[in-house]
Image 1 (tube, rainbow, N blue to C red):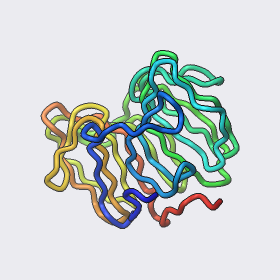
Image 2 (image 1 turned 120 degrees about the vertical axis):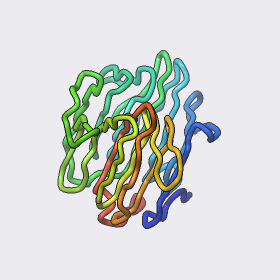
Image 3 (image 1 turned 60 degrees about the vertical axis):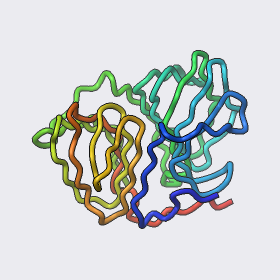
Length: 223
């Protein structure tokens, strides 16, 4: 399966307008943002766990990162409430569940194969750091391949940025880019070299952002 698989093009999904698609596990549904592959895939997905649902135990040969959008996501390593960002690098494993339900943004098979840095951050307990006028951030992860953070844009603030790939999911508020409005749970991906030129909405915006991660063309899992 291929969805938004041309990483040289701008890609948009207003996920709240999309239907939920059942996964192979009962009670676990998905809204796909981009994908190369079938059940084992390089993928970016919003996943919804119904109360009491669980996924089978599995390992992450290609790594997994996720941000909890709603509810409490769980595994044998602990409980991860709304706002928690987690990186599970290649070779890690877990048995995910959600006793009371949860929704997460998850990215699979997008790690450096040699990355072994496992981490979690409760973004609700972090103070934003000033970047520039009308713009601040909560840093989450950075290496030579990518930078991940939560950004906060003040109302009506114009935002410009050069990058080697840009990806954002709206957590709160809104922004406009390319003449298009992005509201909560809308997703935007820009290819390397296409500058970001956006304006925050009247209530500002809180965004999950990853950038500089598309300098090398993405590939599917080598199985």
